[in-house]
Length: 433
Image (cartoon, rainbow, N blue to C red; front, side, top):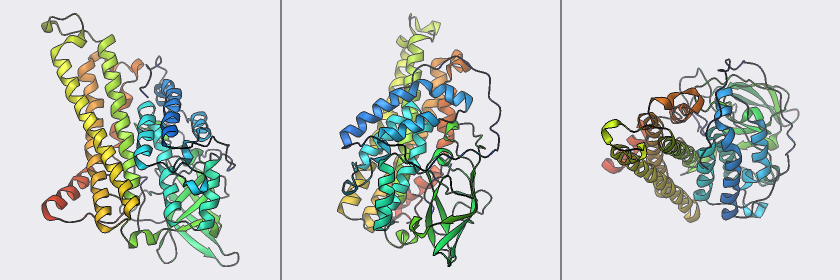
């Protein structure tokens, strides 16, 4: 799923009993939520952000398997996310937010993803577009949207498009309306994670001069249609489907000039990417936890082992140790990359610091994605045939990992890392690394 910026040109609980397989999601328009923020708690600092994330994760974990099974739209859970205050934790302190570090933010998302990675992916885009406002927004735009966000408003996304030549080819267009100094927006987007239930939908678009802009559109604006047409095998309840924009009126105050971000070294792309790494790490943690719990409580030992419990079987003990080590290595790569990003922002973004951050995130993303897929697949080899029964819902970990790690190709992460090590070539500044 490609919901990344596009430049120019807590352990889950046991699954409930199985329900009947759901029908395919209908391609119908979803009712728009109000753009009025729901009201939210204000989180003070990094420590409180982690504590709130753990409490919220404990609330959403028990229903994760059932939501996946039925493809439920998690409206209540996302409303609770808005009230929790977590959506405001990257708002700058001068605007009343906690302004947490990237290291704290990725830990928040990792915690949520271990409970329900679909719900964790929804605010990924939100935090990306908060950062766009921080970096590119005018003073008045920052003041307006940060107040909305601190009161619980959530930003969705409308970035990627289907049927174009490649991910960098955008057809959605923003045109001036001279009579009111505003804009009109037309286009069709897909992979719109979070748009279905958001208060605002940031739309990546080009103007008449092919310059990149972000239009922050109210979800209930005339001409905005969000379809319930998401049918992917994994990350089912992200509802990352289609958004149609039909001559939508957009106030100039809601349009952010984004093209200048790529005229200088930037780490906005790495920031968006690292949030996906956190989600993959959370999926891996959930898979390892559920595999261990199943082996301890349900798996029969192989007769040749001569033990009473599968958890005492030497080969299983060895493999769990190997997998845990790989997961912990992935988590440390995630934390290292976050610290590198924080250092770039703290010390000033240069070509060198942007490259260091982009490469650290690329390495973390490529490796963590592999580990998440490996853990969620290996779960069944370790737990045995009975673990494939639908009632346990354990297949969702593999479906989620396999789907989410396709966000963008790991081979290019390794390519840029290798090209730097071998040839000293800095990674490109295109925002997808």
